[in-house]
Picture 1 (cartoon, rainbow, N blue to C red):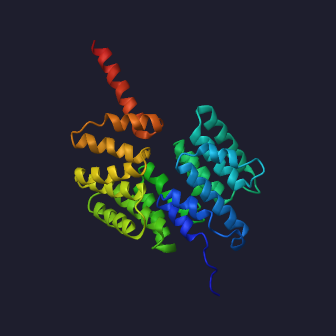
Picture 2: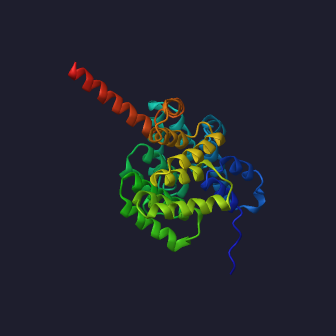
Picture 3: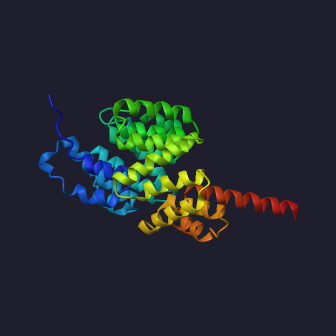
Length: 294
């Protein structure tokens, strides 16, 4: 029997490649009467995750009420986690654990996806994998790849990629995960990653996600001027994009150009970014060394 059409294919794909405004727009054009209850939840979850991705955390927090389904409550917790201070993050994690412990809803894929995302931000990789390792859909498998790469376990990430390739080699998330793994492995794999990002840029509208992928490949190959051009194009699309600002900081330093403006923008817009924390730690270590020598 022929499978039913995936009415959310375009919406999902826009989200995967980082075309968040397109995802928000297209979510409004999918007729609700064509969707199953699960599809309706998926649509709304992607809509709100797109808003989170562009920094509209308070909109998500305001629109998802206490009576919303558990998957949407989980998406709201991601918005709370990313929008707040340490106390808000702690309360979001605490509430997330409550939802996960509920036998009736704890295995929901969207809830597990949000759990993996939040615990990855917490750098609690063991807890993240506890909820994502069993997979269940392409997003969970792709998140596993990201988690393993953050753990510097490219071997485990490659195993997850092979599972994705067996399920759907042409899936956008499979292609992205393949490029992430290639970048982590380095060497001749960088050119393969570049070809993947180039193919995506020819198939779909160019986004910050795709431009940063191409720029990373160029930097790995020592082509910093090419990378700078791609990153400036990305900056024109979103002046507050975290990865663009971080990569521009690194790229500028390699080109011998001032990087302070990009780093300051990153500190203001994304104070918890890994590069900001590493730079701050390095500055503190330098200050301590200077004091010890004084």
